[in-house]
Image (spheres, rainbow, N blue to C red):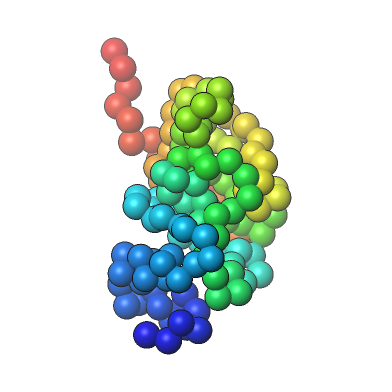
Length: 144
């Protein structure tokens, strides 16, 4: 495999194999053990991969960790103006678990709490690219 290949050409070859190979070709170690999604940036230049170890980014032929906290991101969806996600805070962060619904307008550097903090995490979350609609699936059973 040619190291100059872009993720768009590599992904069909097998996600796990390609990610393990490409992550090994990084200046800094990037581990992708438990992936929760996959999304290109609005300009199509960066591939973001949320996992239990934070957000990994493939850009300009290199893997790196995204700036920002290494939260356990789930239900990850990129729209033109923001990233929407859910999940659990990084250990030692002191943040409420689970996140509920969160949003980042700066590529994942900072996150804004939107709703259901401490109540739910959404493993399935989709947003329209240009609109403000969010589609969430609650896979947890009601207590009682």
